[in-house]
Amino acid sequence: MYLQDFRDGSGLSIEGPTGKHTLYGSEKRTKPSGFDSHDGKGILYNEWSFSAFAAESIGRQVGLATIEELVVRYFKMRDERWLSREGAVNKFCTTVVFL
View 1 (cartoon, helix red, strand yellow):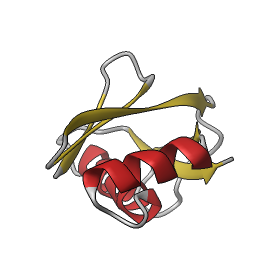
View 2 (cartoon, one colour):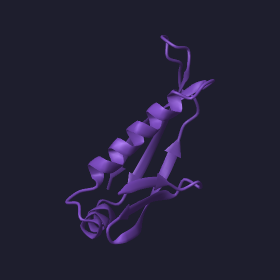
View 3 (cartoon, helix red, strand yellow):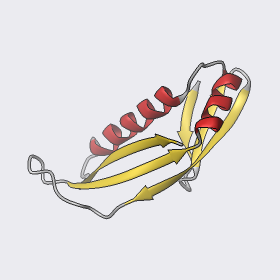
């Protein structure tokens, strides 16, 4: 099973034993709202909002009781990967919301 974000930022592809499913969401980004005093990088806050009903439905289809934790872990790893890029001048702080 894996998650992959869409290049246009509209959602996630979740592939499991029953095939590929799409969890659509909306993303809100802010301009750099400050700098980390330790490393001097700009901090970009963004928020992803997903339907709790859709997440539960896809979770059942791919054989998981819940995919919320998987989605949250994905974004945490993505933020860490972004920060570790050579020459990165900003870092993301992502919040994930299920409505």
